[in-house]
Length: 166
Image 1 (spheres, rainbow, N blue to C red):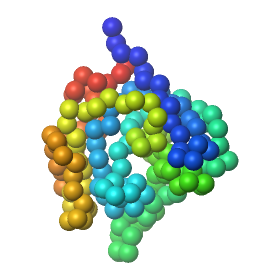
Image 2 (image 1 turned 180 degrees about the vertical axis):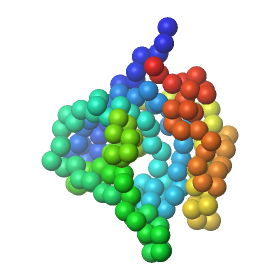
Image 3 (image 1 turned 180 degrees about the horizontal axis):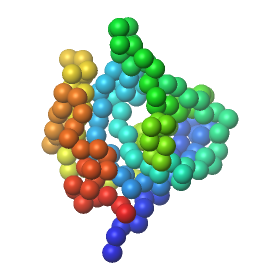
């Protein structure tokens, strides 16, 4: 019998925003240390999950949610505005989710904003080693480290490990 889609509950730190969404890829296995994720996520970066965009239900605080489109390659000749929108609470600055018009059916909640108990991955995939400053250390335990992106998408990784929810 296939697993059921995971219902996730999330909120911001101040409690002003509460939301729910469904996920087929709920394992927080991938840590991104790119300059954008480090700046908006704090310390080492961000762990994003995959969600079904149409399932997003903002229970409370819609008026507190603001959007930010990061600047890729800031300060270089390649500088450009990212197509993704990072949604955050304007009261406490909690990063809530990322959405990109290139993949409108997907939404990527920040694992740090999810209140539902999430599965623990057997191994972390650490990406953007080339962006990580020397002082930042990857987490202890089993991991694979990639100079840029890992081999699999969120869906691909979950399918490879038998964790994708149909």
